[in-house]
Length: 292
Ligand SMILES: [Zn+2]
Image (cartoon, rainbow, N blue to C red; front, side, top):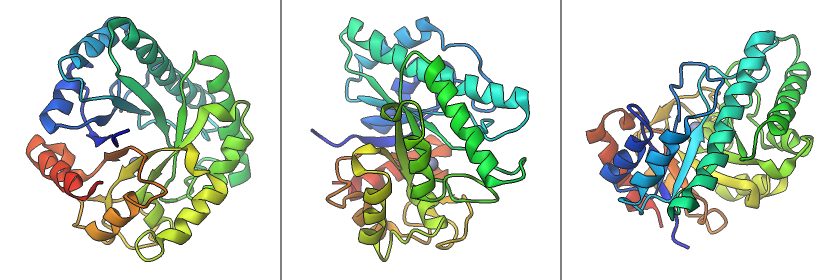
């Protein structure tokens, strides 16, 4: 199968616009926030919205795959009861979105699919120990799995800033293994975050990929977030840079994403250049030139 790749695009003005934005960039995969990312969401995404997106996709069938990125406010390690609850509800509504798109699309003869909901595991900044934080994340994930209709959580590797959970493959893999339904928990690897947390994907990609195999399982990696890095290896800072404008560099990124073991995994850009359509086109062109 042809590799799917693209960029994070806006869903502002309605889900239908996701298809138009994908078409403008000429990509086969996108990532979106199905709702405003700076606002809590406790309800399911409207079915009429989903139908309009699915119908629109038939005019641009090159777009095959959507990833939903959880809203920014989520922290599944938050000891504040209300915020913990809202965090769980927000992921549940996105998982239901995934389930709904994947069941509605075939009814319209559309092959559009949602491939997963990207979730940052959370931050231990409000709690006394990282064990306590991880325990709460685990509880949260189990609640989410139990109370959603379907869909897959993609736990994302983090840069490890502050007390962020999930900057080692081992930590992420435990969250999956200790969950009530590991089949519904997979992973998203982010090139900038891995680099920032100390995985040298530039000089020793094989060693990093070996670690991935050991802890995550390549078959469980469903998405690559492609970013160059504005900070150094091991900086523990989450700072994306445009392709070729950071400390990883275009050649290293090219080698990494096309490594024989990873060359089937969808790739989505999250670089600063995506903010305007003109610069987004430049980023997509660079990706097109390096991806095989
Ligand atoms: Zn990312």
